Image (cartoon, rainbow, N blue to C red; front, top):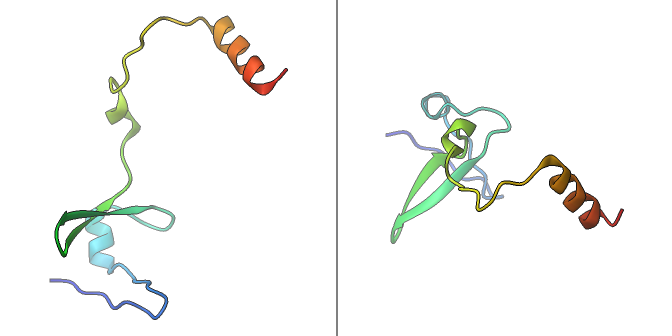
Length: 77
């Protein structure tokens, strides 16, 4: 078991072996997920963007011109 101490500001330093195992470093984010009352998991909030493929299915095909027009309208141009 690896432990860390909470500072008076509520901060902790994630031990090096845990950072290595989680594959996180400076600037990366972690998520705290409640799994049961009083029990939490800490997860690396870094995902390979390729895992997002297929999550959203298009409802219709949109041309580049339509996208540009929508962007101009939204920007008020």
